[in-house]
Amino acid sequence: MPTARIAIVGDYNPTLATHVATGNALAQAARTLGVTVEVAWVPTPLLRTAGTEMLAACDGIWAAPGSPYRSLDGALEAIRFARERGKPFVAT
Image (cartoon, rainbow, N blue to C red; front, side, top):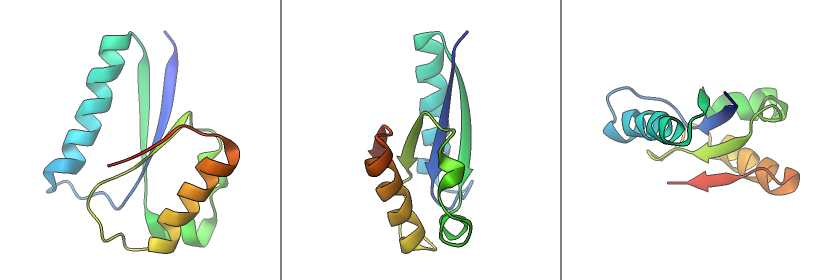
């Protein structure tokens, strides 16, 4: 079964319904498509300090709902990375 690796850029908070729903939506889409999905939440401050190369192994990038982000610069770095590398990108 193929695997899709998705990076969710955002500052995960399990009390936010939108964050829980994002993971559930990806899991449901994977079941429907017959693929496995690996989801990694990537905190925005980490992108600012460690860089965006950690996103290179991902098949797609999702900018999570729930702003303001702890690091707007980190979120913008992820968007730039997706645009410049031709990675599929979605923002909610």
